[in-house]
Length: 150
Image (cartoon, rainbow, N blue to C red; front, side, top):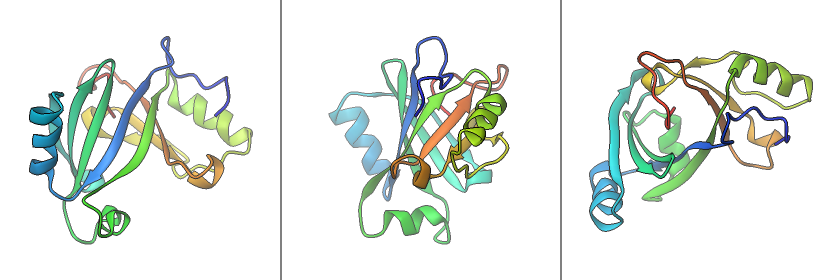
């Protein structure tokens, strides 16, 4: 990514998302064994997932469970119990950042921001433009939105 990426005053990673097959077993590992604190749990109907956020300092580890067998995340998961899915970066103005990245030749999955968890604005960059890593940009939107997660 460019040093111009407007990732907020701290340049923070917002969250790292992991697709999991068994959400309850994964939650037990992350909370009881590893000691992370659950920050939120919600269904994100537009993305067909259940998302659980685990506080990791100023960032979040987000566990994603596909809600149906026809979800692309089921295919992505394959035979694995869990797989790292994407890294999300906080941005101050997602529309401006998407325009800047588009102008810089970055391939976008989302040409326009859309609503993610907590009502925040999100957009994904195509892995073919980011060295094979799926990157999400997310913008906190105030009331109903939440910092530290998408």
